[in-house]
View 1: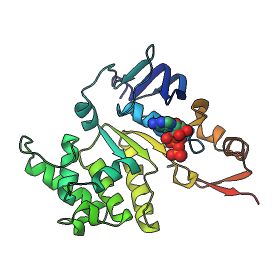
View 2: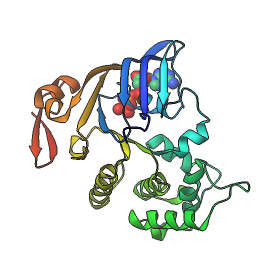
View 3: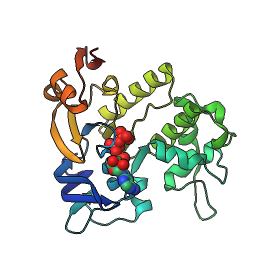
Length: 264
Ligand SMILES: Nc1ncnc2c1ncn2[C@@H]1O[C@H](COP(=O)(O)OP(=O)(O)OP(=O)(O)O)[C@@H](O)[C@H]1O
């Protein structure tokens, strides 16, 4: 892993929207094989950071921003290396034209929305896609259109799409949204195995109960800036989370996991 370039290496990055600066980071690196959880209140810049990595957003001139060691990317080539789970992604698959479940997952190999004539998909890709759907308990949905699925069913398909092509890095923006308790439990265990296998992982969550034992690094954002970046044991504390979210939170370690309660 040491010779692989980092998922993200940035310096002096500012992102503007509507003439306001929505992300302002002086330096941040996420190395190959490293996993980090990104925490912050609503609007603190977490999704903006992910969109910088996926090239949905660009920083203003003067920034240094390397993804997997490169300054510039063909977006499709970049996305083939990524597994992305987010509500924005999911919305895209609900939209017209209709997209069948297996096609949705197989097209993840090409980072496209659905399959096109020029794409040469293989038996291996179809088998891996079917296996990923079975793994997330969504094999029975093959043949259905994405738009016809419930939120949780569509989320399971999106998870299969993100994992089937064995991406180099996973970008998970509230990945458990819409999952029922059993599916969430199963998915978090799958993520643990993937993290142990050395896949780079960025996890955005408001639920600290979802921070995997394998994730040791916490990045805290506030108002688009880096507030803290350090080890879980130092940052997942009642004091830090109370400060981050602006209300009294009690954090309790439970085995390898953490739990947070809001104090009345
Ligand atoms: N296109 C845009 N135009 C104007 N403001 C924007 C735009 N995109 C994002 N913002 C603002 O940038 C800030 C950061 O947004 P971002 O989506 O990164 O937050 P977040 O930390 O992911 O929040 P949440 O927890 O609510 O998902 C927010 O205040 C948001 O309103």
